[in-house]
Amino acid sequence: MKNIKKQALITGASRGIGYGVANCFLEQGLHVYGTATTHGACDIHDSNFEPIILDFLKPESIDNAILLLKGKPIHFLINNAAVLLEPWDDSSVNMKDLRLSFEVNLFGLIDFTERILARLS
Image (cartoon, rainbow, N blue to C red):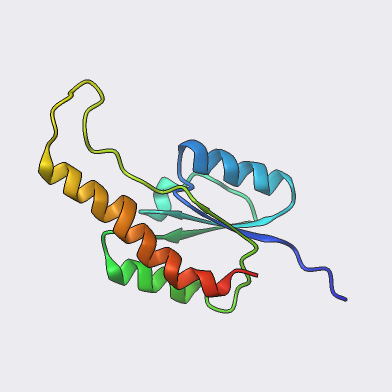
C-alpha cells in the first residue's frame, strides 16, 4: 500500500491559532492547505504549504476554494477563520457588525464546511 502524506485544511491560516496550527502540522510533515482572505496575508513559506484565497462573505470565493481542492484528499479540517468586528472595550451591540459577524462566522463557515465534508478522508 502506498504511503500517502496526510493533508490538512486550515481556514484562517494567516495569523493567530490557524497560523500556529499550520506551522505545527508542517513541522510534523503534513501537507497543509491554508486559507486566508488574500494570498499575501499568509506569511508561510514552506514547500508543503499551499495558500488558498477564501472569503466566507463571497459565495464565488467559496466556489473557487472548493474547485482548487477538487481531487485532493483532506485528512484534517481545522475551521479557524472568523472575524471580530466589535471593539473589545465597548459593551454596546452594533447590529450591523453583529449581522456581518454571523454572516462570516456562522453562515459562510457552514456553507464551506457542508461542501468540503465529502472530501474528508
